[in-house]
Image 1 (cartoon, rainbow, N blue to C red):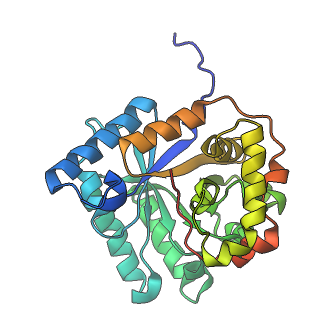
Image 2: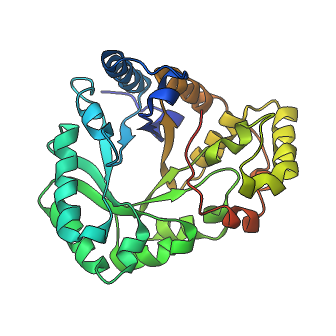
Length: 301
């Protein structure tokens, strides 16, 4: 009999691999192809050794193929896949979802996510969802869902389409999903929530550098938040991960990593004791977050 294991923060941790060579080596001199492949294999093995079980992918560039060539064997990972835009029609979306599995070297995926909630809101939204349901019925994907921002009305879309998973931008600086009741509504519908953008484009990590133009007016507020964390002797990465992982409605927290070293830092921060902080006091004003919401938010370690 195997004894019960206490829940670990790593149970919620998922990774999205950043394939840009400059960031991956933290240098302006990209590694040769063979070295990049070895670094990716090492990153994935490090994730497996740490107990990470979910990898989030997207159909951009050559990332899927690289992952497919680098999985540990046997692979311990479940994989989420994103759709391409519906612009070229639902046939193209379905074909590309099948192609993603081929490139990843997988017979089936865990979750297929509509990349843009607007695709579901359009005229072909129901036809698109029917294709995803058909792929699920055939066993190519275990679950289906969509990615959304708060302005997309994720709870309303969830009531309409009844997804298994919804991926949302959730982070310490932008707590609207929690305070607007979106997470509670999704939980009531039995939907799993995957949190992305957990590092808020690295805004808490910027020190001595100019802020992005749309955030320049928030320099004082960000400085105040960083000062509060410093006074509490809490690392910003630890705080951002602890906030997202502490949300009971969130089943997976996706951190973007470009190297095994970045992943080790994320794992260490995730495993640190949960700080006793007033989370609500550490967010930016909702109006400010909404004004900057159109910019692409990615994780930074």
